[in-house]
Image 1 (cartoon, rainbow, N blue to C red):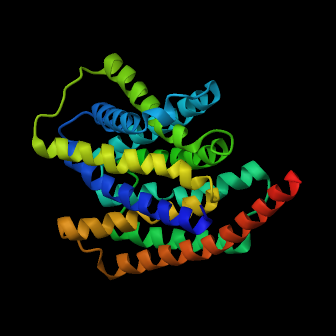
Image 2: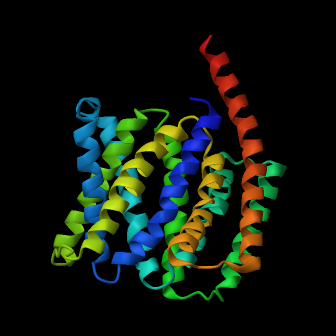
Amino acid sequence: MTQRQANLILASVSMAWGASYILMKLCVEEISSIMIIVLRFGIAFIVMGAIFFKKIIRTDAKTLKYSAIVGALLFGIFIALMYGVKNTTASTAGFLTSTTVILVPVLQTFITHKLPSQKIVWGVLIVTTGLALLIIRDSFSFASGALYCLVAALLYAIHIIVTNRFVREVDAFQLGIYQLGFAALYAIISIFLFETPIFPNDAIHWFAILGLALICSAYGFVMQPIAQKYTTPESAGFLFSLEPIFSAILAFIFLHENMGLQGYFGAILILSGVLIANATSKKQHQMRFTEEDSQKY
């Protein structure tokens, strides 16, 4: 797989995740946040496990350990995000969570002790400006829902960086599937500790749950680590910044929401920042693989 193909897959994952905010909003008022996570990741793990049983049945302790770690991050992301969506609008939640794009290169700077390249800095500044325009459009204020979404963004950034490291040591496909199972396991434990399990009754809620499970989770979180193996954390982070754009487009189509001139200008800025950052990331990625290949011989 080339980096361009990996980035295209990550863009499709971002589109799937963009749809998740609308689906979460459909059921979060009627179903507990933890139960949504149980069903979302539980169904995704069962479906993917059944389809690819032969590919995941033989695994090792290292893969399970890493899956438990990223599964815990996944559980934390969606606990924070579900409470965030419950206390703010779906579009605002999408915009706030996409601040992951800023946090990934910042965290990478601390990890590598190297300043990001000039193009990545410009990409961050442009994307940040675009996100600010989108947030200001909604008369943003730091309510509890917004803070939950920012916590989710931080955990998202950590998840991207950790996943990028783990997929270079274990099978990315197995990691992607088992993390779903661990996220569901943590949610099951939590729901028996803190709540009484109650399943949804309405068809619209099951439609939303299945959409979250099969499209956003089974596809999104399995393809994410596979594609990340062939690209960089910075590139993945910037591609995930497309998530609120897809969310806004889907909201326009299905909910007839209009972003307005300022919102569309912000979207254009985000896309511009993505292109600038990806050009740099691709070069860095090729240099890294050249270094790795030279070390083999």
